[in-house]
Image (cartoon, rainbow, N blue to C red; front, top):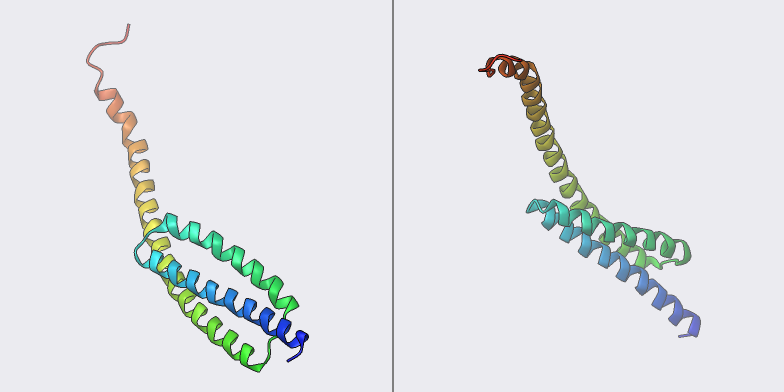
Amino acid sequence: MSAFDSASDDSQQVLLDTYTELLTRAAQMQVLASSEQWAELIEERTHYVMLVDKLRELDERITLDDTGKARKAELLERILEHDVEIRRRLVTRRDELGKLIGVSQKQRDLHRAYAPQQGGSYQDEPSP
């Protein structure tokens, strides 16, 4: 094995290890979404995006052999499975928040509509 082959193997391993780390973060994000820990999910997503940026750079520099390509495809498939579930939970949460916002707006509108009438009926003393 030449020094070039060894360096190539090492760089391939770095790339695949980074995809593995991304998979771990995606799995953690799914756990957070499933347990409705939204603030923690946002924080974890920050780290996830940083890893995606790192992978973009690594992918441009490193060429994988056939075994590496197969492993990368497997990791990407698993990452995407987590992503689908996370997105499903986020859509559900968005819909819940939309309903809450709608109820809140209706309450505000009712308050605005009836508050002036209530204000006038509470005056026990005449104005000077």
